Length: 428
Image (tube, rainbow, N blue to C red; front, side):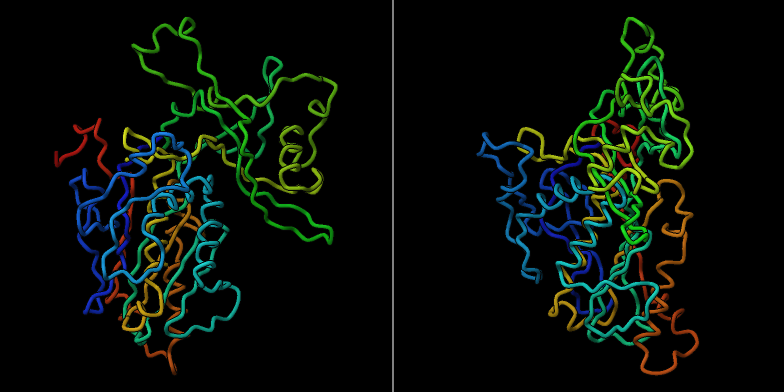
């Protein structure tokens, strides 16, 4: 689990400048953190303490996050700056999986007036318009077209990713041992796997459900109550763990407990013949209850193991955000918020470029998927945008010309300073 310092109040990735080339403003994370970071802007270097005088307020309550310094005059967003920390925590708590992160980003864009496109349909775009599309329910590309954009001008892109290291259910997850029901899991990405022990875990992800007319629907599911547990071996059974280190076998020691095997004659012992039967019937029943469908209607599942502990404020002055998945959901949130806050009609009225945010999937495992950064998703979108906005036939080289006038910034929260591990940083 990760900890990050106090978050400043404004996002200015797409700040207006007299030049058509947009440059990140100088910035800081908080008044107590001296290293510059271009996602955040605090002109007065005076981030006030949050909930400092309210000792009775629960740290899990994000509805009363207040007392943030006044936003700079260059900001045109109508959003209250004091809500940004609470909005980030809400986004983290909604985004248990890459699917949920993309769904929440989609909701925010629709609420902000962006138009949803489909890669399968013809696009009708116009200068001043704001659009987005999703791929695989886990990748999203959003863009706002400047009113003064002409074909050949550049794209100003901020990229992040929606996935984080986690445990995933295996395609055949049902297993049992010593009269306990367990689920088989596999590691995803480069995780700190020892942190998954002794935590209140559950499942969330995507389920394919058969509807009444025979068609198939993709639905998101999130079981919020603690459902699973990976217990640590007691110290008297592993006396050398503190000397030799905790070295779990990722294939055998990480499989969580689900329940006691109370009925040998139940459906648990039946022959497994379909894909849904590769999972414990008890787990499938829990999923069907959450989705409001019959177990037989569940055609396939793609689930992550998730920590049920919510993200929250922490520290003596509530100056920290305690949360997992900060890499890279915090960057996804910042990029998305920056685009929304800088894409009002006044912001785009004098803009010559196209402002774009790309949230990719599968970064933690190499990005080589149709929804990952290794796919030509963004370049294909750029070509389509240029084709749509051209008044006539697009001359050869227009796309290449636009690329030469573009920039892309990739933001990673894992590169922040870790105060305990100062020896791992070359600049300290």
